[in-house]
Amino acid sequence: MEYGLFGILVLIADIYAIYQTLTSSASTGKKVVWTLAILILPVLGFIAWLIFGPRGNKAAV
Image (cartoon, rainbow, N blue to C red):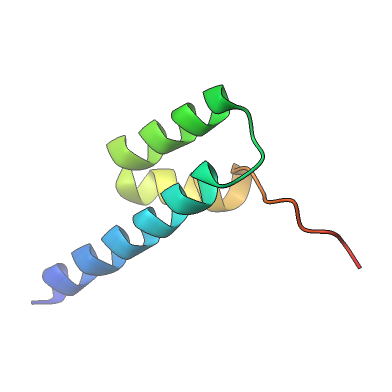
């Protein structure tokens, strides 16, 4: 059962990462590369996205 819960958490995290990537201001090519990386390597792709992924247009205050 623990593996099933872990799988659901990874799926939710990956869906969140893909959504954030597709709605970011990054170029289309970068969006495609990040989305493929997250889909092909779900755990490692998500971790790489957290560290190196495109960020949104949030103004620093």
